[in-house]
Image (cartoon, rainbow, N blue to C red):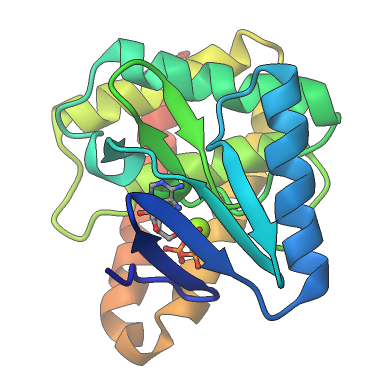
Length: 208
Ligand SMILES: Nc1ncnc2c1ncn2[C@@H]1O[C@H](COP(=O)(O)OP(=O)(O)OP(=O)(O)O)[C@@H](O)[C@H]1O
Ligand SMILES: [Mg+2]
């Protein structure tokens, strides 16, 4: 079975993920993070084999974090927070590529996948703002549960002394990226971008 990927050859073969790269830098980066995270107790798929710029890794069965904010539990979000926080502490910097499709709930804990993208910003708060923006980017509107869990996520990092102003910068930057990424639907997405921008105030009001 071939799995959808923007950037890689990706397939499920004999119950394992086979991920092929055409760029040595990205291959090395993925290998580095998968190995270093595993050694530090940060949940990632196990590497089974590597050859010819290809990594064969464990297939993580579960639910993508993109799919659980409307009905998820605090335990699931807490595990995502723990994962991100441990990563920031271990590498003393952001993860980047915070698409929620790069996080899987395996029934017990959050597992991070996909480390091949280049770093494109330097502060850890940016990661948090990006995730919040992804959570709030729903054309059909944001459910009460989604908002509750977004606030839980936001508060968790504010309580760890992450700077709100920098989180906001990450959030607003991701809105600009949404506009560029989905340019062909620019009119729709502009409306979405406006809505998501307005959602920031709703998220931030909680502290008043
Ligand atoms: N080890 C794995 N276990 C389970 N599913 C995986 C694994 N690796 C990849 N996938 C699935 O394939 C999708 C794409 O994988 P990956 O993130 O590595 O590639 P990508 O090119 O960045 O794709 P995307 O643009 O969707 O992020 C993931 O969102 C996930 O659904
Ligand atoms: Mg990915």
